[in-house]
Length: 237
Image (cartoon, rainbow, N blue to C red; front, top):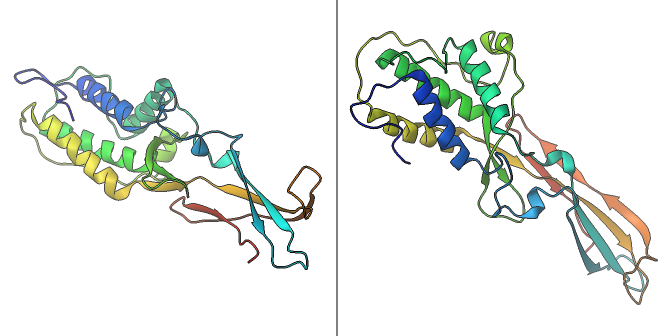
């Protein structure tokens, strides 16, 4: 991660905020637009996959056509920089931190700032996964929480205690703290799995075509408090 500030310069809250935004934009792959490397099976609401399987449940062993479709509501959308800025400023204001302030930051403020950044990221950054991909991709998930909800601990943000100290710090510490934040995110970020629906159709003995009649339709999903979703179906053996 690049250094957030040069040596021998005065660090302000606005400078810290800019450093965080720059890091976030390179870290999450759905800010402004989906990163070109992201596969369509986790972002395209019209994505489908078709395949067939011979059925052993009928006398003539007619093939079963299976159509897999993505569930659009499970797709995390693109977010704008303005939306992220609104989420972050609302959160930090509820924590008593003015992200636009040009006031020089002392150690107390520095540690408080990054502790709250870690809490913010642990709730807003998720790892998007799919049955077709091995390594999850980091996305930003919008909040919509108000300052009042955050102050009253009515959100999924981790509580951040007040820090009682007052000392000086070195500008070079910012880069180290950003790395610490990233390590925290790797350990605590939620997993968001894209869901798929499956539709099975019994086909004619010659082929699977548009004349096939639908014989079954099955989809299932489960969820937990950590926002993990799994879509599956059992095909005839």
